[in-house]
Structure formats: structure tokens, C-alpha cells
Image 1 (cartoon, rainbow, N blue to C red):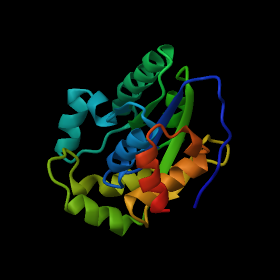
Image 2 (image 1 turned 90 degrees about the vertical axis):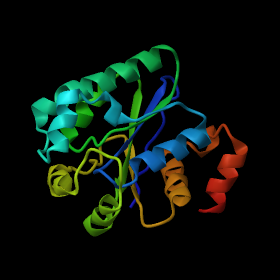
Image 3 (image 1 turned 135 degrees about the vertical axis):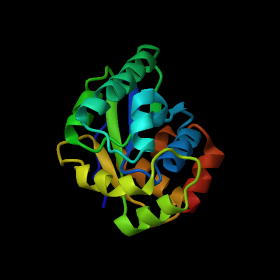
Image 4 (image 1 turned 90 degrees about the horizontal axis):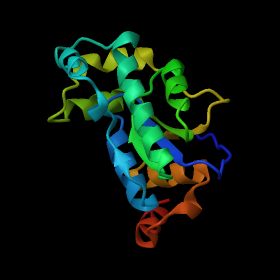
Length: 193
């Protein structure tokens, strides 16, 4: 499923790769960063220590917990955009209200919503190591998730194909294929399309 958006060529672009934990946000964001030549930031690094401690104990975050985290990500986007830099960030951005906070940044904020079956994500999460998010929180992530609305700037991309094809779908849906900074990386992605 894909939804195409137009482009505002005047502002720096902030691509937010969103979706539940273990859906492939980091892999997709890193590959987008390589192809586009834009800096990449891992949204989890913006979490206050209290949030990480809470999730590590298997307790889902609430809106109050997420507010300072989202504010930090928005501030990061503002700082990068002020320097004229496009950026790519991972952030679950599960609710529209969370995305509304991020959209307040002084940039052209767009979302890449990764879509997958809950069972696939559960399997990925079960095999993931070294992350603070326990598998017990997966249901709360899916229960909280509100898909991108038709009026939200972004694209929905299913992750039912290899990562290079997910990236190609995202670039195409966002109209950013021509922005690729690294021709060799672009050829690898397009070859997988």
C-alpha cells in the first residue's frame, strides 16, 4: 500500500521512518540515508532515561512520557533545518497527535510508515538482541498505532519485500528518487525494485 505526496522544494526535508518496534525502521532509515546522502538520527537516542527504564521493565509509555521525547526530536529537526540540512529520523510516531508535534518543526516533515503483519514483527522482535524494548510491549505498540491519514504528508510502505525494495518503494512514493546523492547506492536499490 502506498500513498504519494507532493514536494515542497523550499524547506529542508525531515523524513521520519515510523512504525512499531522491530518493523525495520533503523534498517530502512540507514539505507535511505546512504542513498540520499542525508544524515540519519536514531529516535531512541532522544528518549529520556526514565522512558528507557520504564520500557525495559515492560511498562508501555503513555502520552505524558512521550511528550518530552517528541519535543527533543522536533528540536533536532529545527536545528538541522536551520542549517539547511535534510535529515532522516526513526521514530515510532504511533499516534497522529505525536506526528502533529513533529510536524510543528520548521521543515518539510514527511513520514515513511512501514506496514507489516503483527506476526512478522513479533518474529523479528523475538530474534532481536541488544534493545531495551521487550517483546511484551509489541501489543501495546500495535494497539496505539494510528496509520497515516490521507491528509498527512507521507507514504505507507509494506515490508513484505527485501529492504532495498522497501527503500525503492519509499523513494518512489515520496517523489525523491531524483534526489539520490550516491549513484551506486541508487543503482543497488533500483535493481532490487
